[in-house]
Length: 77
Image 1 (cartoon, helix red, strand yellow):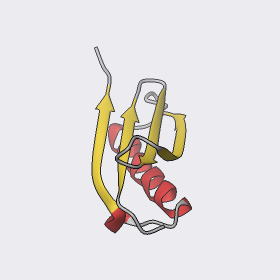
Image 2 (cartoon, one colour):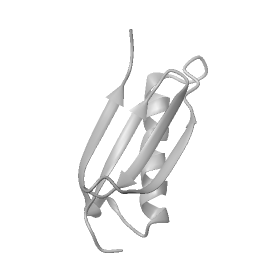
Image 3 (cartoon, one colour):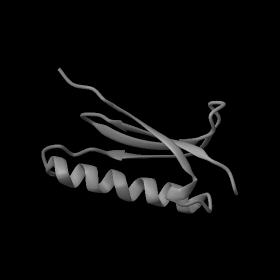
């Protein structure tokens, strides 16, 4: 695949997710797992999200050079 994609990151209290998609809104790959905030430091959560992004891009045969932009959401009180 040789195209520019957008990465979305959602950091929640119970789960974190990463998506890779096209600018049209089409989702090409999605991963999620429990955030485990009581077991992980914020730095560990961010490190794992970084790994998830790399894994998602790799699954599509892409690298960080193919990423046009990144959006993140992080809920909280």
